[in-house]
Image (tube, rainbow, N blue to C red; front, side, top):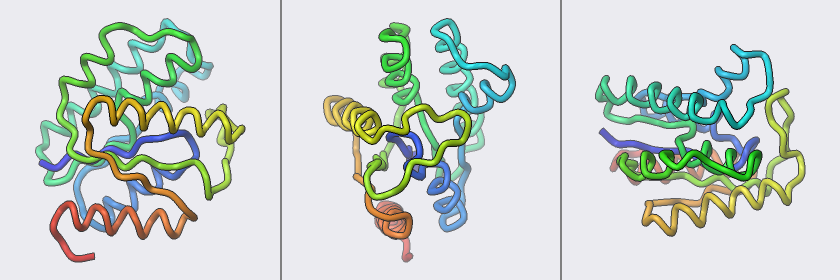
Length: 176
């Protein structure tokens, strides 16, 4: 099983690219549990929700892993939960980073916030590019510090799609 993670700040095309890549290469996409949580709870999150959200994300990921698809595409993983917890609440449950490091992820596509417009959707909260750049930098630093395989994806929507498809095709050893 090849495990691909799309990561980076909000409104950079992670969900869209996850679906595009699934259409092109097959596999299973795991979405963002936090979106489900907010839709279900009908309220903003608080620090007490962080572990519940992270456990929900892991449960969704584990259910997909159990199916043993040739390609598992994660729209997010615990790195986003960790960084959002630190951004919003200046703290993060101690168990989350070791839990993230205990899992195997083969390739991360890190999406840059520059080159595309931020689109509000009722759950997003970083319309300021500087905030999204800081989140992007936090992702990049963590991935590098922890020896994760990462490819930066940037540019217009079309350029992102083309770069992601080319990268994943090369990684999987298939023609585009």
